[in-house]
Image (cartoon, rainbow, N blue to C red; front, side, top):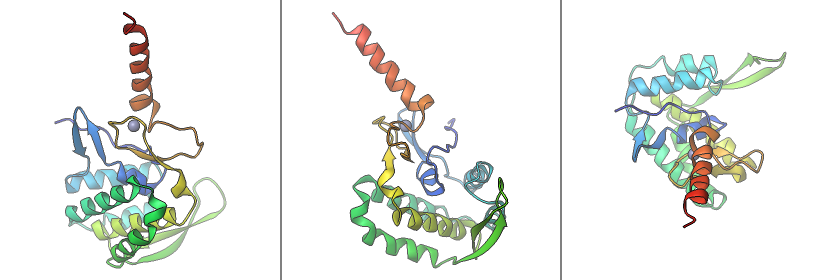
Length: 196
Ligand SMILES: [Zn+2]
C-alpha cells in the first residue's frame, strides 16, 4: 500500500513525531512501522533541521531498532495531548524522565547554521530507539514546561490526526494543501449544491 509522505507540520520535533501516524484513504497508517522507515524519518528530520547532524550521526550509529517502544511513546504522547494537557503534566512527566534514563543526554556546542551564534545540542549516550526516545522526551519536557503547550493544537479537519503549534493563534489546519483546501471546497460544494 502506498503511504503518505512524512510531514513537517508540527513545527517541532516531538509534534512531527506525533504526526507519524496519519489518517489516509479511510485508514490509520503508521508511517514508521519498520526500522528503515524510522531511519528515513530521522533523515527527513535532519533535512528539515529538526535534528542536528551530530544527533543524526549518533542515532544512526545503532543498528537495532525496538519499534514497540517508539509506538508506546507516541501512543502516550497522543493520549496526553488529546485532553487539556496542562492538567496532566505531573502524571506525564515522570514517564518522560524514565524514558530518558535509558540513554542520558550529554550536551555539545555547535555553530548555528545561519548566524555567528552557537547552539547547545543534546547528544544521547546511545543511538537507535533509546537515543531517539531521549531526544523526543527532552523536546517534550521543554514543550510542556513552556507556554508552547498552550498553543499546541489539533488540526480542525475531524478526520486528520495532526498536531501543530498554533503560533499565529489563527491557524486551523495542519496544512492548507491537505486539509484547509479540502474543507473549504467541501463547504463550497455544500453551499452551491444543496439549495433545492
Ligand atoms: Zn490536517
